[in-house]
Every structure is written in structure tokens, then in C-alpha cells.
Image (cartoon, rainbow, N blue to C red; front, side, top):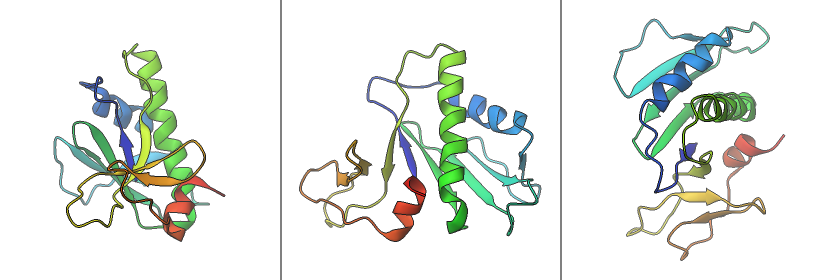
Length: 145
């Protein structure tokens, strides 16, 4: 899953603030057995009802944040947790940017390196506008019940 920021927004410091916001919720903790990088962190969910244990990797790629999670049954909740943290930090810190758009690494055109965006009508479409993605079941789990 990708949280894509607008071209006019360069949210300096937002990534760290989002990680702190997730950690302050007391349901996410830093995974102790992972390497620490300035642009990436792995967190695990501490709620015992979330079994098997849910780990997420958050990666700051400057214009977008990547979220990786291997547990399909919790993708929507993970997306909502991260999305809420991002929106909350943007509002609290008065960043002059709108919340990011949801996107996926999806385009199958060989020459196209664009992300596939989630549109308001619920469809997923590549930014190159030459390919309308057929969403996979996994992508649907990020955005629907």
C-alpha cells in the first residue's frame, strides 16, 4: 500500500511524527529484532486479539510512504491506523498539504513506472492513464471489509 502525497507537498518531518503518533497509541511498538534506518521502521501490533501477530514496515520514500503487511486479514485495519495517524499529524502540526491518496504498485505496462491510484469511485487506475488495473483480492482487502 502506498500513501501518495501531492506534488506540492513535501512533508518534512511528517514521517517521524507519524511513527511517534502510532507508538503513542500504545497498540504499536517497534519490532526489536529489525534493523533501524532513518527512512524505515518495523512495528508490531500489541493487541492479543490480533493473532497471528501483525508486523508492518513503514518506509519513507519522500513523496510517498509505503506500508507493508503480510497478514491479509488485518490490511484494512492497518491502513486505517496509518491513515488516521497521518491525517492527525497533518492537522495537529498544521502542514499545508492535503491528506495523501491511496495507491498501489500495480501498473503492468513494462515502460510505465507509475503508481495505480485508488479513485473516488473505488476503482484502481494507473497514473499513466493507459492501463486500468483489475484490482486483486489483496488490494481489495486494504480498502474494503
